[in-house]
Length: 229
Image 1 (spheres, rainbow, N blue to C red):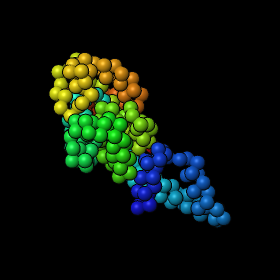
Image 2 (image 1 turned 120 degrees about the vertical axis):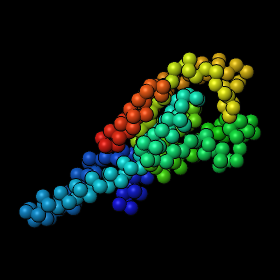
Image 3 (image 1 turned 180 degrees about the vertical axis):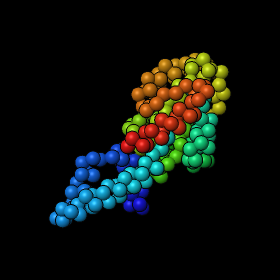
Image 4 (image 1 turned 45 degrees about the vertical axis):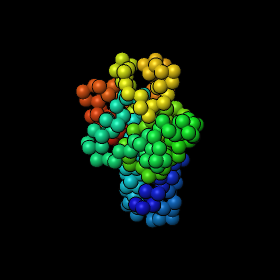
């Protein structure tokens, strides 16, 4: 099981699927080669159970990613899901601020957006390697530096598609892209139209977070996703 845990981490980091039917067939054939015919069914059943248990361990390391616009409710939804699923929650923006001992505003001002995006990718890779987290991502993370490919096969991705009208009038602290030019609502509207299709393409499930049973729908989708692999 320890080996299965390391295999799961390797697969997540390298965007490999949990299930590899060809590899499973090869393992079964190798383990039963030269065996007495009367013992083969028992041996195959034993190895099939080992493989099944290994995949259960690997699936437990799959992350649940929440993506979407600033103020769409990723952290709020993450807290609800953490309680219901019993999984730890990590917010990538807060993770970076704690690591750097700087606010997002200061990182953008002193180091620039490109440096911040590199930090996002680094943090995402660390979370993928550890596994088993609910991850509230920064608004731009799924659309930059090939991060969408990192999300794939390392977990279940949910786009919180909150209505544009509900995103207007938000606080722009630690959201420097929303303050450009001084018109926050105009920037929110522009980013919404620029990013919407990219979020949808990266997601396994799209949910309106203001829907009454959105958390339950996400939890069910994650469980079904893990069980199907």
